[in-house]
Amino acid sequence: MSTPGVEGRLFGAAMLMLPGEFRSEYGEEIRVLARDTVREAQSQGTASARSARTRIVVDLLLAAMREHARKESVMHFNLAGLGAGIAAAIGLPMIVASYSSYGFWGLVRQTGAVVGFDSTDVAVHPTIVLVGALLTAIGLLALVHRLSAAAAATVSRLRIAAAVGSAMVGLGGVSMLSYALPTVSPWRGAFDLVGSILLGAGFLAILGVLIVAGVIAVRTRALGALSFTPLAVVGSLVLLLGVSLLGFASGVPMEVFLRGPAMAIAVWLVPVTSVLLGAGLALTPAPSGARTRQREPHPA
Amino acid sequence: MTVETQPKDLLPLTEPVFHILLSLADEERHGYGIMREVRERTEGSIVLAPGTLYGAIKRLRTLGLIEEAATRVDPELDDERRKYYRITGLGERVAAAEAARVAALARQAALKRLLTGWGEA
Image (cartoon, rainbow over all chains, first blue to last red; front, top):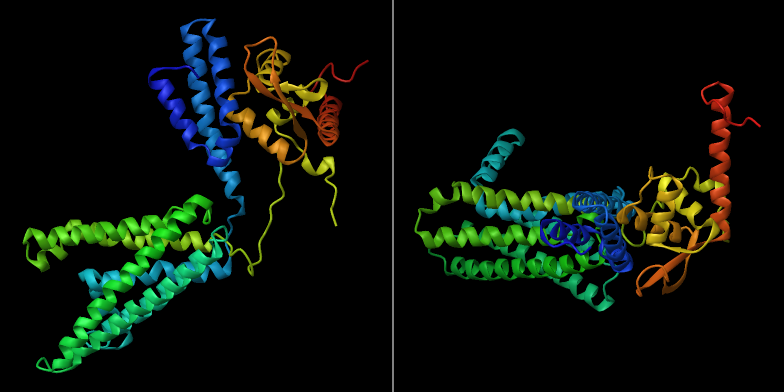
């Protein structure tokens, strides 16, 4: 469509909204047809040409929505995916919140009061991290399992990284049991150091798995319309890290900073994106093993 | 074991899909050719915009109702090569089944005097 100005840019944007596969197959033909249509309308005046351009852009936007919806018709709820989805939605946010959110600990205290455990017990935080790490491992392995289009070697490496990374985070949490030791104990310092290294390295491994799996998922539409969610989780974690570092650098007292709005937003984005990732897993059947429902293709 | 698609399994058709099949029933056409033919035949009441047209073409090809004929130059237009599409045997049967379905509906409406002047000799 030879249309300079706003309409031309809108046409370009609308074309970009079409699914990549559809665009690569019919994009050129759509451009030629749009150009012919506008050229024909121009012979009837400027208003007619403008009307034709607007109609084409609106139609392309509607077509983009339709094509995306049809493309994701394989997405459907499945029980195995639901379990993994819940694990992914809870695991990582649980660990992150246990290190960064006062609100989370308020919830733990309330739960402790109802269920009947002492939330100040030194074993509570390690248990939370351990359970969180286990759930994270389940979620990550389920995500990797859905990357059927990836090379087998890449999938194997991602599986190992997911399992090892989650285990390191879990062990890092367990190392906090050292707080039960006397302050003067030399073992406490050693446990702290090893625990911090395990936590840091484990988080980096998890982040790495999410980045690689996220890129593959986006490129292969492994989670359908929710293929962006692994990278969204990465984004929320990076934002949280960035806000935390800014907070440390600003010199604001830690307690004030942790209770501040910036931190609250950054902390809440992690569960929000994780729930979306969980939904992606719950709505995408595993490539094998899970029962899949095929919809009959229909022109309507 | 392959189960052959029956025309009635694909009914009802959407309006753009039916018109594309009708447009290709008598000759091979490219996208712009289909759009013009449908617009002229329906006296401007149906104008297929590019997104709708190629979305329908994609589904029709997937279902095997139309196929790509060739890429060649349209002598009436510029010197650009365009993809032509043609209807398949299954496409013809599906279009005929849809026409029969719509005709049966119209007959029922005529019997109830909702449609005057239809089906009279």
